[in-house]
Length: 314
Image 1 (cartoon, helix red, strand yellow):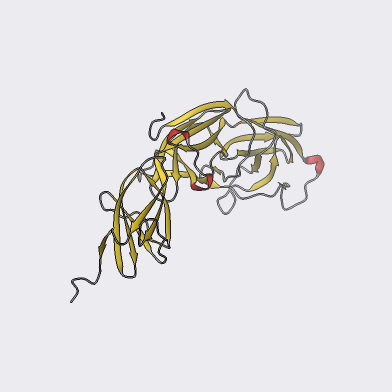
Image 2 (cartoon, helix red, strand yellow):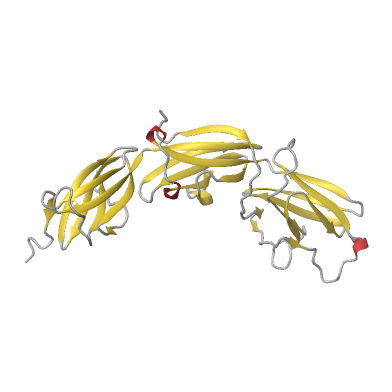
């Protein structure tokens, strides 16, 4: 049986998928691009004065050329008046050919959230340059105890840098990653947060991405989906306009109150107290969440402990 919070890995050959993402060079934000931006200058460029360069990218130094999903940006190495590197040309796809005036440039290739930068020199003679991204893929999923599948709409992942900064916080790389989607990342270790529902079912794992491979990681949530209703008698109809709040075993509230005849939420395994308020009467009941066991919790008005907020008032 999987251990709480453990990440289960299987490695398969990388497939080619793409995911758009921002990139940066030495902290400089790179602008968005069109499908292709021709070299720009104050004067028209004579075709005879241009040199041709072919740019390719690979996941590893011995890998094959990436055929699609790349974003290429070519920059002048000298910063402009605004302190940014001027964008000279750009393209999307796989291997790309650029016609550029002879000189030195910085080229950046991004593939999802993976990227690499290289200084190139363009001459009058055509040449070919390759960039090694040192990147792989990460595919995330989660299950309940016993391998029960979790509805995809209730499951999200966020990917952070593994190391904490000076403020003891980890930098967020990608939020709200859908389960079973492939994210391209540079090789290395990442901190992944899996959230089931919107309350307290959270699992954290450190996962390593290897260059040229697709890493699949599945975490196990020890939680369950619980639905509450306030009834006058056991098995009766739910009473409308009821406000619901959940307290942990230590008495701490979990999130904001929910209003309605029914309240449904995903909770991590453990002991809780549900509080229902209807027409100035407050009812409460203790209950236990068992991992992987969804349940309905009835608060019976005639049996539950009730408190009149007006009792004892002058």
